[in-house]
View 1 (cartoon, rainbow, N blue to C red):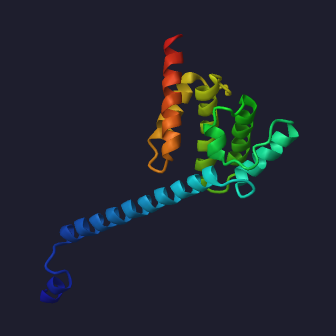
View 2: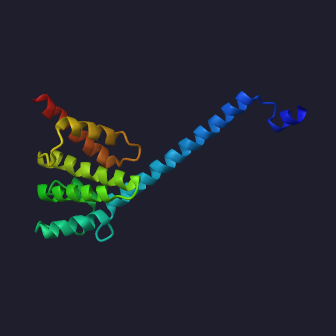
View 3: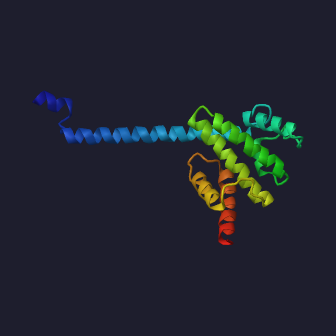
Length: 176
């Protein structure tokens, strides 16, 4: 019996279970923080890389070239999303390209980033062009923007954009 006490430092089984539970919770929290940091880095890279390094922009620019709109080469995705000069057509192409990439995404992280960019294009068009480029209702967009704002890994610039777009959606809903 004394050997058992020494091996567990005198802790009872329920105390050991609690201790292991705390360690497991700490490990899960650390892993979640690392996952959030990794996702934030993927999003930041996608937003700030300039052509030709940005895979979403490569798809977008090729679609824009095919649709004979002004090319976005030499700009980052964040510049396109935040530029008041970006046309409705350019934002529509970003939205469609990110939607296509989202359906082809291999990982949940890729899907989260492309879905975020999809909504960022919609939000940008609402905020900068006062135009809704989706069939989603204002209620649905409000909910989506709210969920995205709450993500720990969300870029600050997008939180601001989504917050502004969310206010527009709420105002449009109240006009009904």
